[in-house]
Length: 312
Picture 1 (cartoon, rainbow, N blue to C red):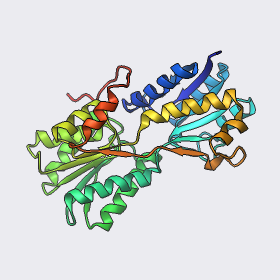
Picture 2 (cartoon, one colour):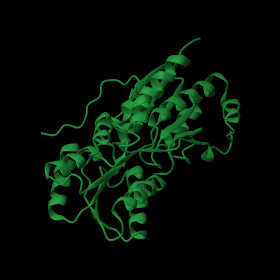
Picture 3 (cartoon, rainbow, N blue to C red):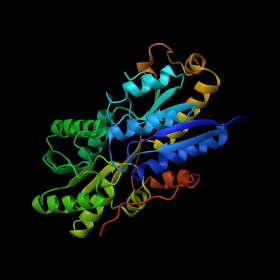
């Protein structure tokens, strides 16, 4: 079977994408896909569009992208479609861009509400909770914070919002320490990005407040798994990002080899009204008591070398 060349453009180079890319690679091995994965170092929508255009001009058979901003990709998607190159979105969606389908998680706001309910059960009404983010404008970050805030308000929980740390783990750690110092009554911490549970657990430990501050968040980076097993993180929600890459690869293979109408119809999707063509993976929350289940799954996954958040 002739390999298909697939251009993939992600949001940034955070270690979060290692898991996504493991799914891409595993599916590519089975489906004869030749992957070209690119991403800006930090969130940069213009750079993403430029990367997609370069991939398109290189002659790829299909494109896949992460919609860091929902209104930024319409032109490049239209250009690719005009050249007969199928385009799918994954992780973050741009439903009106003309992409053929989306593979990813539930809406960020719903994900934020999910973690908010976990926090509310841990800290109770009247508590104070610190919230951190790596971006003040990224739709995923904004949506998660919005959902989390809504639940805190419903439960009468006070929120202390941190400014954006710009996806800088060292900055996030220092901010966590500072806010814990200024708000000694804090009993919960939440952050929207995968490095936040790690830096928050470290900050709690550094200030000698382990056992008094519940840390909840997203993603299952190796250190997050270790901190869960140790009890330093109370809960982390895995959005199953490995399968974002795996199933997006499968969709692309079918879209190119079977044809767009046939591949979408096979998935119960509409070849004409594409905005509603979504495949959503359910989220799974792990705690110190259940993290062993994730470890068992993870032993089967081959991740590329990653760069964990480094604190000095």
